[in-house]
Image 1 (cartoon, helix red, strand yellow):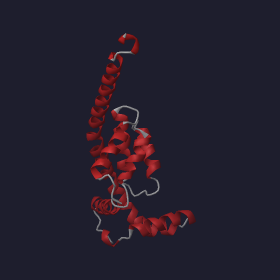
Image 2 (cartoon, rainbow, N blue to C red):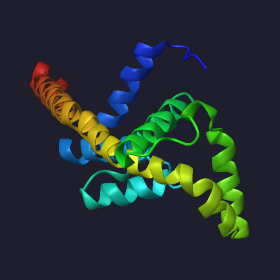
Image 3 (spheres, one colour):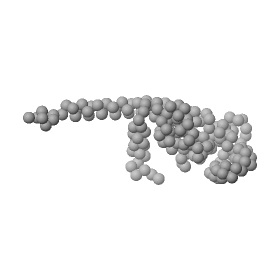
Image 4 (tube, helix red, strand yellow):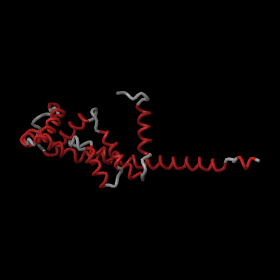
Length: 186
């Protein structure tokens, strides 16, 4: 589970890979922000599709959107689900019938998948619905905030990275063109 090179180096490598995606800083930052934002929705199994759709709408990178969905992972999902569940109840001004800590979200999402495949509408509307509706409501403002939290610092960081990379490449090309060739040495 722990990266062999360490978290700092792994994070740095991931940033370099993202910044090297072809495109403008907006294109890359918007795509990654879309993936991260969609990770804060309760639509498990649809995160890739929804992040691609949102990235397409805001003219972001689909590759970066796919990478951004990694924000939602087994370590972060429990916190995300509890947060959007509680926020949704607060926004709806309804007292939660089941405390977030008592909801088995993993079991709930597994049963939702099975119910969808069996077309069991009773489970979807009567049992899962009262949990999913507040999660959906809580995910909307959370996803908007997360989008800006990722986009605003990432766009200038990618722009600076691309500028430095272009400068280094131009400097290297200049040095190579100034180097003496075998014909000029005679």
